[in-house]
Image 1 (spheres, rainbow, N blue to C red):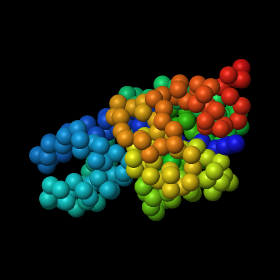
Image 2 (image 1 turned 180 degrees about the horizontal axis):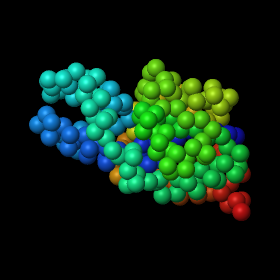
Image 3 (image 1 turned 90 degrees about the vertical axis):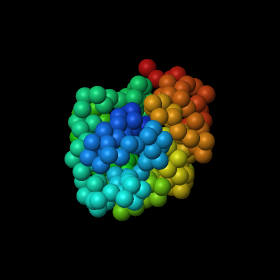
Length: 226
């Protein structure tokens, strides 16, 4: 039986990826005359700001260093401080159910801690997580499994005891390399290819259904709550 659930943040706990890309799209058009398309969003999902900035500088021969562009994009982002960013429907109920059943929980994201921690605190997530790891807390980022392996070590959980929820191919690659049971969640505006996941779900409500819960192999079952 599994006893630990790890969550990605963007696209899994909050529907932020398209909104974040729109801010980047506006900044790049206004300051550099670069017109990013919707398909560019899929190119960068799951990676870090540093990785995206490096790619943009190389692709469009921008007159700026990747470090400077990354800082510029980060400074220009107001999404994580905005009330427009809310929890995915059903996410809080799912987390509360896990906590009631004694399941350990963790958040593992490639996004910088200054964004994740402030947003997690505002959304009431901090008290629902046993561990939070952000992009600037590890040396290697997704698709490398370092973040997930570090979270497992902090939770004293073996890979076979863990479920990981992801929404992107890059995130799932990291989750699978970490050795966990993987769930591809397709609840955000940007539906990505999660065919590599062990289990695919359209929503948190589906995850809580008896049949799917049984496949997650977590303690008790949603039908026994209350």
